[in-house]
Length: 343
Image (cartoon, rainbow, N blue to C red; front, side, top):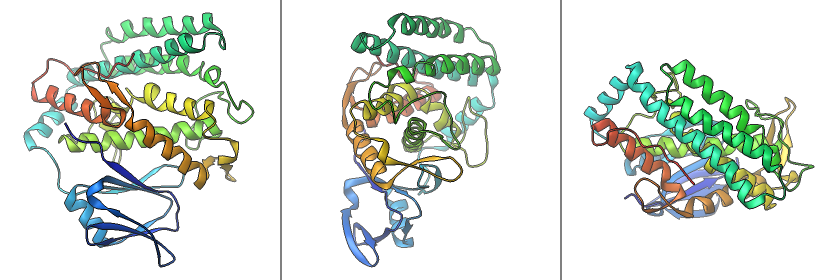
């Protein structure tokens, strides 16, 4: 099993990254402010418009260290990649499945089954742990709707129908998101999911968490030899990691949403950690982003028992495990793709 290493996050836009031997050096105004051995990290993620030397980019590509450039709001900009992992036979079979509507649909149904199952158990966990703070009957009603949607998903015979059930279930789930925010209600509220750009503090953090999780899925798929740009449910589009977007659906509620609720309700993030641009977009400040990423790194290191392989695994390794299971299914080692189903 792959070992979870550290990711170096560079959150300030005035930093420059360079290579010194086997170390990445972080400088600001020609002053060295940090030095990290490359063998301790498996990824570097920068936010803003941080620069990096060609020597460092080449070393990262050679050593399989992911170097990702993100905007200050967490939007993906570019990534440095080395040699393609995996063998051509695995990817050729992936492409055959992507071109076969029925085979793609079978995988997509399993992915959405995992998404709805996890969404439902987020609600059930809230009922169990915070029953006195919520309208339990309303939560149970929405939970039962998601349970019913699970059985309907398994009977669909085309992708449009599957997307319809998935979209309706997501709407039902998000209708309760504001009820799961127990603290700092003056700064954190949720009326509806909005993005491109996010228009409130809660949506800003959801978008940021989804971007980080999608990046984890992209890296995991590449590590096992799959092409993250060719998906089974999300359609092909130049520059879009469609398979990573497929895979991240399983983790949105159980990893990202619960994490965002946690940093709000534990007061790790507060209203002062955001600012609003002229176009109405709400963005985390540099300090807010540092708090968010520190808590995210801690979350990635927490262990759970993976329900399929029945082994203790860090949260940060769950996308890698799922990518491995998908590769095993595509190779023919498994009868179907087993989605991640948390409880």
